[in-house]
Image (cartoon, rainbow, N blue to C red; front, side, top):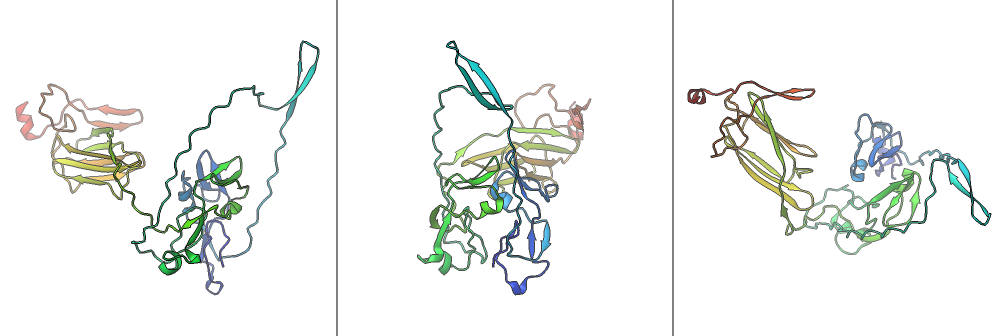
Length: 342
């Protein structure tokens, strides 16, 4: 049997069903301005943009599995206020038109040409990679979980056939569906039951696409310093932290970041001063990669990267975080060697 609780949908055995078996949501899904969340735990689980991430939001309530149909509330349609507008022509004819309140009548304008469709690249299953039993098919609309290679992956048996949706879901004015087919429903539970409109093979582990079309790009790098640290921000949006590498050495930093759309950013920074690699760190964020470099001494770095040019009196002052930004220090902080040269 399959559990009908929202956010669960797992197969379960009635004999092994206890009060802690099911993790589900008691509220309803909320879709607003592209963000997706659950009304019962929006303050705990932050809203997400991608539908796949929404489906992975863990349940906020524990209980036993059930096969009872979920209760749904019938929405009450709002009745729009209609205003009658009177228009008179030169011949004395009177014309009445009905316009909903708050809307302006639209004149006869030439329709804009539809945009060219974007080609869809579908994932393919990598048969060389082993799959864990219970792994769910990645295709939209398919609820099959992996049992064995002979049943779900190899050959032409009935278990290898996948019924899925080739295009992403669409949520508009309360209706829910997929771009690849015409069916639309109001309830989220009914949306999850929309049968796939295309047949193919299951995808449990997607193949890695060839990087032949990979392009190198540039990313903006900002930084500021304190007496003990240099904070570096590399604005590489949505860097793949599984493939990307950041190598921190005593005199340099080596960046190799993989970005969406087959783009890649690679750069080595020859640092202005020495740092402690063991005490330095980095972290990936959605819009950037943040590095905290621990100085080996308390001197002020004139710039981030070492250079052979004469910088004159240019200096980078220390920053103090505040509500209105940063406040520069008044003096340079030098080590013993550089203090003798001044």
